[in-house]
Image (cartoon, rainbow, N blue to C red; front, side):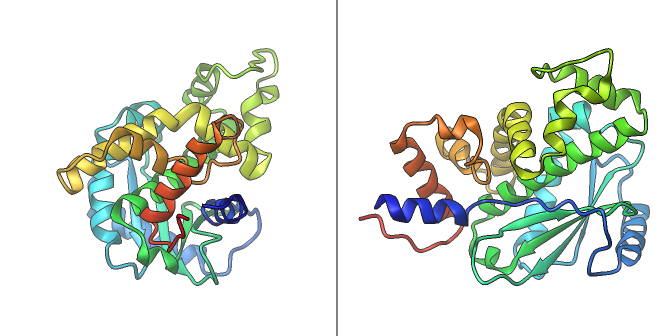
Length: 262
């Protein structure tokens, strides 16, 4: 693959986050009501409750098996510590390309996270869909910890202090590196996602694979797939060029993107 093509395709496999304090284009109240109804009928022990309004045909089975994987993962005990399940509302958007595969939107008055999925994801494999959801869930986890910490939730504060980030100021908690990175948008949050969650994300996707298909991908392939959206992190930039090419090819193939490997 030519280097110019690689630069272009790298921009097509990012997962931008848009955390907006204002109102969103659809009714947050309506989706919140849907979530309350869904949760009332569901298992109160679940870490995450999804309301799926997406038209992607294979998404329900992916959500079902990913939920099982999450609820038996270390992530559950470490980061899903609220009295209520983390609510995520999934819906479709139409984009002209793969440039925006998915994004989380969370308004100041929202009670659940709104995850929009590009309809181009209908071409993606189940593993790619699961990787997309895992990535976006990690954004929700960061924002949930941030929100709870601002409300003086002690478990959230304990989580932040346990992260071992470079600036861990016990005299002024809001001075901690965590808050600076969360507030710096995609770039900062992606750094946190890689540094704090990447290894657990790989384990989670592998667990999903065994539940969903009973077949485990090569560990290297799973790791490569979960670099999706993290290509602007410092860690990714330090990888050898050939490794970056291999990662990009793995991601694009999983997403059903036609590629020229010349």
